[in-house]
Amino acid sequence: MAEPTADERARRLVALLWRRHLPPRRTARGPRPAVDVDAVIAAAIALADRDGLAGVSIRAVAAELGLRPMSLYTYVPGKDELIAAMVDELAAADAPLPDAAPRARLAAVARQVRAELLAHPWLLEVSPWRLVLGPGRLRRYDRHLSALAGLGLDDVATDRAVRVLTEFATGNAGTAVAARRAGDDAAWWAAHGPLLAAVMPEREFPTAARVGAAVGERYQAPGDPDGDFEYGLNVLVEGILLRGKRP
Image (cartoon, rainbow, N blue to C red; front, side, top):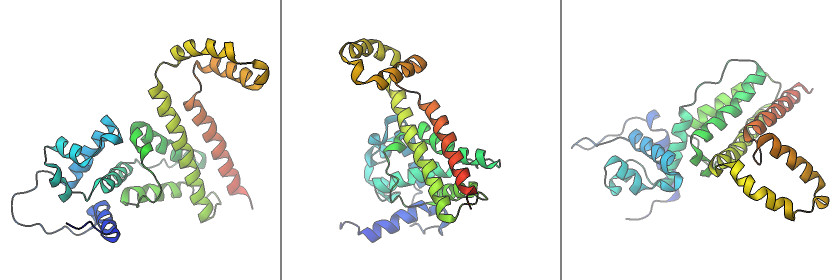
């Protein structure tokens, strides 16, 4: 069987993402399929949540559903398309943003992005670049843009503000996930801190030594991703609001 062309794969991906918006496909007579596309995507998400993105494969998802691996291709064109559908399905589950003051709406954009990544850390491994927009991601984008309505930003600045809030939340979520996976920071520092103090000439790193000691005493860890998020979010929101007030 010949490999599908790039155009064919693009059509299959768009058809998969927008399946609920397209006319139902005619199916041949015979026994009803054991599962549907939604069940395949749900099984893949559950597998990624449990085993990480590396654990997601056509064979593994088929096994979760009790199917033969080759039969899964009747539901999804391939692994890349399946991952795109997983991402879009999670975005489709977004709750509406609050109808609140501008500051709270802006903060909600970043909080929503971060919360999803903390709940599904494997999303951090999926490149957001050139990810085809399905209805879930498109609705999220529309809601996030609408959250900035009335701030005095033009269309390009509105898009840029949403992207900056998203990228900040994504970067912080990556740090928070790494901290979560690192384990007991106090035990790690108890072992490494004295060794570092013995070899580090404080005169060469005076600012780092002073600030590092203050941070270690305050957090009992190398840092505080949750506190960093709140601090950075306040700064970003304030800057965006000020930008919108410029003539």
